[in-house]
Image (tube, rainbow, N blue to C red):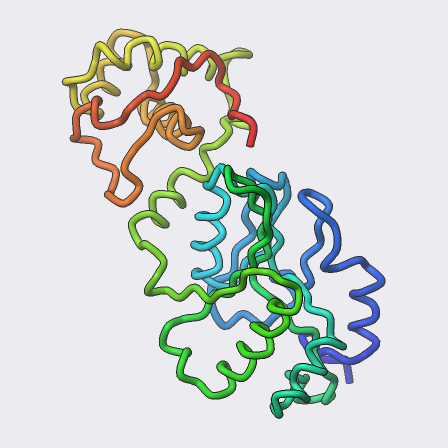
Length: 280
């Protein structure tokens, strides 16, 4: 009989270690678990990270929302998801506090515990590492969840790393939805265009006319671009999303984007001369 795809035994753990899972930084990082390695009990996602220039493996909608918030922040340098904890340390912590270590129910092999996100942050206060785990609020009272959290908390306390739990209650719904809408528009590369530099030209036209269109509705401005500058249907909004995704235009992320709002509700931060995304 074939071995369960999602089960863990010691040989599989050693193979993952040999593959370098849980090691590396930025584009070279390999998460301990990918979406192919876990049973699908919810919606999983593979999302390109603008900070890291690699695909991130996210195992729930909550993880996806938290990832999008990290990826948006200018202070974030690196995001490492499904980060493995040293099993010898977590075993010792479990023994010290008198709880059972997480194990595979079939093989009885002690599992490698993971933290959803380990994030490098650099801002005016300096550089630091934070660790965050997502968990639905409804599961916080579960005794076994609390036990595993205590192992995780003590682990990161030993590493002198700020660890915390984020729940669905704390994720700002409107902000996450806006970031989902903007995230794929960080770059316009890969789209079919009639000539090289097409999107750069479109970005230049929008940028040059933005302030003079301040009292016009966004939807009306897009229609004006089609009538006076030969934009195809939808191209005006595409450029606006691109500018928002690259923070050349600023919107209130905690409110739903409204195409009937006036242009001046979106503030342009600087002239834009290229259709390429800004560097992270």
